Amino acid sequence: MAEARSLKDIKLDNAYKFGAGRYIQEQGALEQAGAEALRLAKKALVIAGPRGLAACEGRVEKSLEEAGVEYILKVYSGQNTYEKAKEHAALAQENNCGLIIGIGGGRIMDQAKATAHFAGDLPVLEIPTSIATCAAYAPLSVMYTEEGASLGSLRYDHEVNAILVDMDVIRKEPSRYVASGILDGMAKFIEIQNGRSEIILEEVGIPLFSAFTLAKMAFEIYQKEALKAWRDVEEGSLTRELEDITFLNIAGCGVISGISKGFGQTALGHETYELVRTFFTKEAASYLHGEIVAVGDILQLAFNGHPEQIPAFRNFLQTMKMPMNFTDLGIDPESPKMEELFQNLFHSPFMEPTPENEKKLREAIQYLM
Image 1 (cartoon, one colour):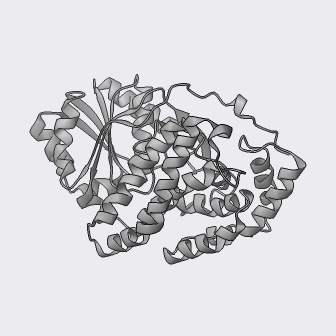
Image 2 (cartoon, rainbow, N blue to C red):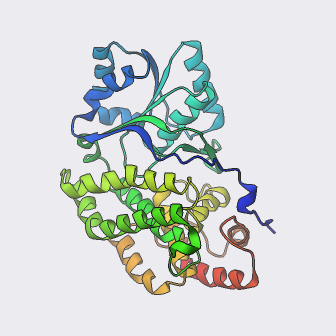
């Protein structure tokens, strides 16, 4: 049986880190890469995912060259591991690079931050080519084994220095990635309520209440605009709704995480993600972060005492062709590892391991079977 893990056992930085030193989101943002890089250093290590680099069509390299910024380009398609981050960090140090630039999806965003950390806390310029997560914004990296099992988060005591989001790139990304980011963003509102039917200022304090208020606002906009933005990307269109959702997925979610110190805005939905990656690594390997989190948030809604909200949430998932239960993630609900997953959820830092909560959690997890 898993041992109870208390919030007291998790070392958190007391400082609030609200986001990025500079955030630019617009058409043609990639043409500013050289100028933004030059603010930070004259030589950079560029770590890029192959799809992300292709999506930028050489515009980042051209901008760096025009600004006189030297760079070393490393194309990387693997997991965000400690080993690779240290290898990239050594490369940066050996070549006197003063800046790390990440180009790609969430794994590359996290790899760039981890590389900068191990290279002596170098500045970071993130260029996300996907809005599937807020990884570009968050002052942490989610780390994995080479096989894709979760190793938790590597947290930093500072924010990233700059983020460039080019809407000409985002409107061409797969709509599935947009849906994943939408679901990860909606999760903040669902998970902040962890075990509560409502959030009351006097019970949680002003910081978490502020995060909740922003998350509620974002959730309402997602309900209104998300499906339109998702369809716009399927058509390759750039609209106000896509601009809004892009901002919420990256910057909005990043600010919410910062106000809650990167922990209070996540609970059972994100813990389900971590445990699925741990116990069902191969089965769920092809699924995105937000897709797995959304499945966990069905459990979270039930645990919060709001099972009546699940049908509408499932309909939302179904519209965007998202998974809705363990079977949809390629996981056998009868697997003996399912009890291990349950016990780790029950003894997670997000829950007091009482008989009452065990009963509530067992009832909630049935919605995923």
